[in-house]
Length: 261
Image 1 (spheres, rainbow, N blue to C red):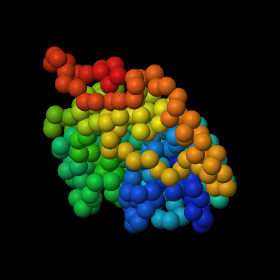
Image 2: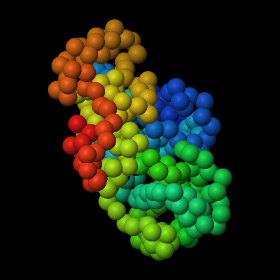
Image 3: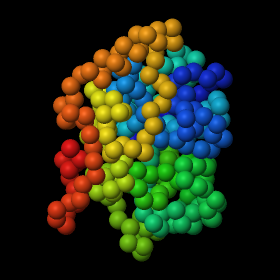
Image 4: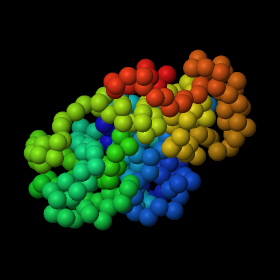
């Protein structure tokens, strides 16, 4: 994944994604899943913002989109805040499953038991300082640990040693597809892209909300409105309305990405 900090005394539009309808009044140390949008309504990426304070946010984006996402933040903020890329300095390990939260809490000495969904804390997990968040992307309960890259091997080993007796296994991101499809969580490149608006994603992405970040220039709302109207008139190659709908598999095998089409 890609990681960055957004810091500054102002409140530029590049940080308002954490302040849209579900997160406008969020206190510090809370997160929100949201979308980065073009004036047309197309999706640049989906990401999670973690709010330290009104002047500091930590954001996790898709690794393949890191460069364009950081450029998007800089365009939106107009230099009113610092966009600091820490992707090479931070490593993210996600522990997913019904026993994940309790396991990570035990490794943190019982300091994370009070975390609720989409909250986070600075913690020491298995002796490794990290940002520990109760977030994930499988529909299961989860803990995500973002630590310095230099400490990643020690954290990985400790997490794997603790998970193995509980039935935990090391897996790649592709293995989450069956769970994230079941939970109706969209995947960028599969269900989200720059050519399709949020409203055309259909029900698969029903848990997301569009942030109020689609206008690059406040003085030109009419232009932004025309761009969105034009996007709605463009034929959708995924069907009449680009709909997504849950399906039951016809055999006992994990659904492939094609199953979402």
